Amino acid sequence: MSNKHLLEGSVTKSLLKIALPVIIANILQSVYQLIDTFWVGRLGAKAVASVSLSFPIMFFLTSFAMGITMAGSILIAQYNGKGNKEKVSLATGQTSSIAFNSSSTTVLKALNLSSTVTIKKPIIIA
Image (cartoon, rainbow, N blue to C red; front, side):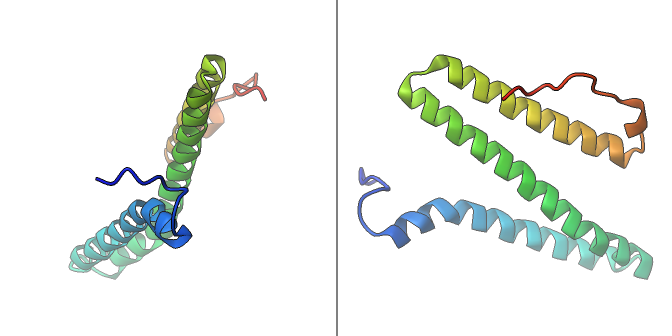
């Protein structure tokens, strides 16, 4: 493995090194949906319609989750590099809170239970 830093050399190569895992994950997600649609197609038109309807929603939710976790890990790495343990703790807590609240809200909305949950106090403080 090369010891070459990402900030040295060609910008295009550095961007590709960073973006390649995300591109591969998105391609795999799309292939998964296509295979799913193929197999569900044997069940009928309504089944295909439901899978086709769910694809953009699942793609958005997956992209949102990836964005939140990537942003959080970047902040945590930067604060850790500076040696600021207080900010590391804060960024970790906020990222975890956003991830937990987003996922639990999505699940509750999907189960139609969201009207029973009320947050009286904000969890994340800027």
